[in-house]
Amino acid sequence: MFLFACNQNSGEASVERKDSLKHAEQGIIDTSITEAVANTIQPNIEAFDEETRTVLQKFFSDSSIDELETCVFGFADVKTDAEFAELYKRTCLIREKISQEPSLLENYDGYWVSEELTKLDEKIPFIVATCVAECTEFDYTFNLKEFMDVAKETSGDADDKYFDVLIMACGDYGGQDYNWLNFFERTWDYGGGSLLGDSLCFNFLEKSWSAMQKSDLFKDDILIFRDRCIHDMEHPIYMYSQEKVLAEVKRILEAEILLPKEMERMQALEYRNSVELNKVQFDCLKGDCNFGG
Image 1 (cartoon, one colour):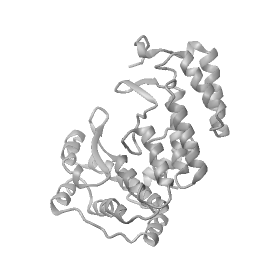
Image 2 (cartoon, helix red, strand yellow; image 1 turned 180 degrees about the horizontal axis):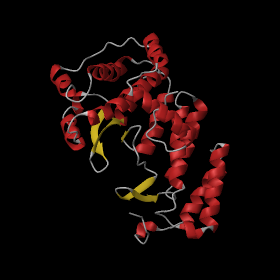
Image 3 (cartoon, helix red, strand yellow; image 1 turned 90 degrees about the vertical axis):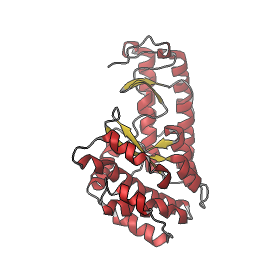
Image 4 (cartoon, helix red, strand yellow; image 1 turned 45 degrees about the vertical axis):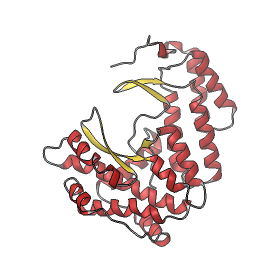
């Protein structure tokens, strides 16, 4: 199984993503995915121009460049949401692989790599060069709005609903290793507080629940996002008041939009935030909280 979420942190999904990451690092593309795409999509492949390919060759292997080229230009001929899902999974794998390849270079400088590859952003659909870890590491992220534009043109709406959910969680840009979702407010490089209390978590869980009921195409990935959403709600630092936090928790519990294990986590969260007040901080928008560091 290949998952293509912004990020996830624990449980079985974590093991699955690690397997996917290991395959990406080794340059392995699942043949079932490749064969499925080959059987359903006959893309009229465009190609990187000579200048773009020359720059890419400074950082990536020819095989990786070829796979990236096939994926990003292949979306032009995708006709259905099922075809889209298969090619998107494949694109996630190559994005993951090429995000790591530059780190193998001698005298690797993540900031310099991101600066060089940013110059190609307009020539490569769907991906955007960036840097993470205080800009010491290079990364490629996805332009989710561009994927949404393609999804709107396919038959079937599972891809439309998925990217609607994804953009709600990530914003316009995101990738498998995108660590900060919209359910959490960063107050410094490595921390911050949960935004539970502003209704975004409820809206996300409700919309993602609806998407899962209508199609299984992106269900595994949506479940990863739901796990991340609840994980951020479980953070002990809250930007809003206890009253607002508990009100949204109650709304979520009453809405019938949770799986059994999700329900258990939310019930435990409600208890902690009502009774175990020595473990949590509220109203941190006022700046009177200890955010760590």
